[in-house]
Amino acid sequence: GINAEYMGVNADATEYVFKIRPGVTFSDGTPLDAAAVAKNFDTYGLGNKELKHPVSEVITNYKASEVIDPLTVKFTFTKPSVGFLQGTSVIGSGLVSLKTRKTSKKRKKTVQQTKGKTPKEQNKRERQK
Image (tube, rainbow, N blue to C red; front, top):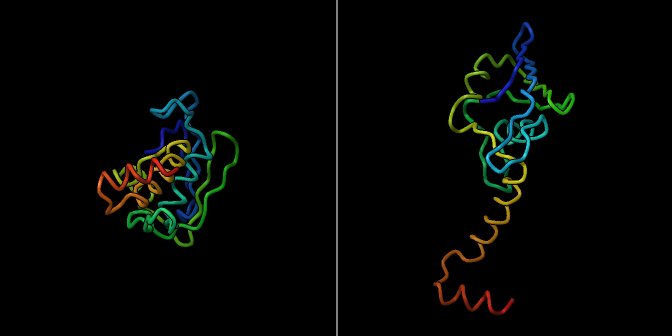
């Protein structure tokens, strides 16, 4: 879930605001901030074709995120999303640092390039670089 010191929701459950606890870091040492939280939930709520991430089935009616300040993020929904808080706490909605997301893209490209190749073919390709 989101490590927040404050969470607010509007009356019709179409807007949620989180104030992130200061001083929290990801396991890679980068700070947990609103930009990272927004990017993660944009991926869960809207999907990501490049990374082949489908839209999350637990985060429904997602419209967008907005970074209010470095530690505050607002999420907007097209219809009431009363299950959003629960959706933020499921295993499929874990937060990943922006640094790790970039590394994952590089790793995925490498995996795609070597997929179906024997170790000998992979080594030959590496030597050709």
